Image (cartoon, rainbow, N blue to C red):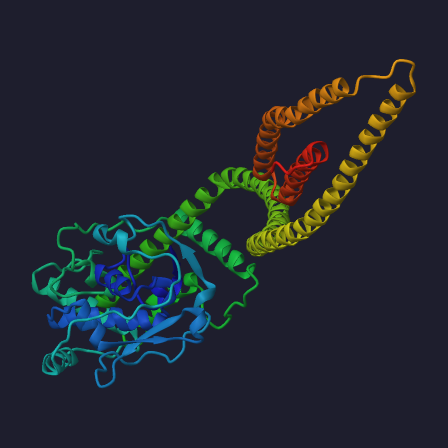
Length: 522
């Protein structure tokens, strides 16, 4: 996580980071680096003030006593913490913290830097503040807590003077207990010394150990690392606050400032000042060495992970090349997919048009079938009517013509019969004349008898011919009727023709009989 040196130099924040601060930041959903030093001073000041006054303050109470505000633009995600309206407790801070962001360092999140039960609450990413939902607290309770906390010393303009007062109180307590020799030790929790020591006393289970005074080599190493950090800070392109003293200068000047306001270094007051100087120097030496160790660990970790970073860069380059190839292939596939979609859309449009055409054609076909069926029925009806009419007309015409032909045949038959009789008479006369002219004339009675005998067979032949002609007429009529039925079954159009054939056969048969025998046998 990222931390600023101003948090520890000017705000007197300590390691491990206090539990109440981590929980307060977790409730609001921000990390420690998003809060400016003024907000850190307010939070630490209220916490230390509650310890001094013996008031147990919770995160909800702390949220009601403070006001969480946006610092600068809202997109920068920077925030500040100040006293709530009408709840002022901490005063004496400068209105602006100049260039505190120029000097920072990174700390590993572990039990050495954060309380063990708050490691999961630490946030490292800058995020937008989430307004928490707090349970309502009565105004009377807040007013009573504010009144009780206001009884303490809320002026934090000079942190060194506050620390000096705490150290003097601790020295007086030790002097009253009978220890007159000056010694460098951590003050007890009954009278809290510096804010860092007071905050650590909130954990009674953690034992307090004091490091020995730093040697000259440690001091030289500390100065070298401080100078290196200064060069690194100046190389980042940011301006350096020339008016703000460096940490080494503050560490050297601070003890003098702590005792510079006193009139005389002699006597008991001088002893207290010397003891305070030794304690403060020891504290700042410990803090500086801790910073140097953290920075050294960080540099070592950076160097050890340089190879991993280079390998990761190479792997990233390979992955980037593969990603570029994948992007190219993806673009080609997207183009192909778009082309296929266009083709599919064209085919779908064509298919829809074909379906519509097929539907129209099917409807047209049904309509044509209906019209054709209607036309076929109408045509069949008309044909039947025409055939019947034609048949009737032909029948009437054939009957008329048949009657005319029968009359003509009768007339022709009569003439033929007369001609045959005349011819027969002529032949008989010629034969009789020939007999008369012969040398042996015939006997007249015998000839008459002969002629009578010859006439009888002729009359008998008329009846015989009628009997012989009856069977052929019946056979001819049967064949004509069978042929006409078969023809009617095959085609209606030949009905008139069959009828004409039957009538013709009948007429000719009657005519032949009439011509031969001179009688109508129909």
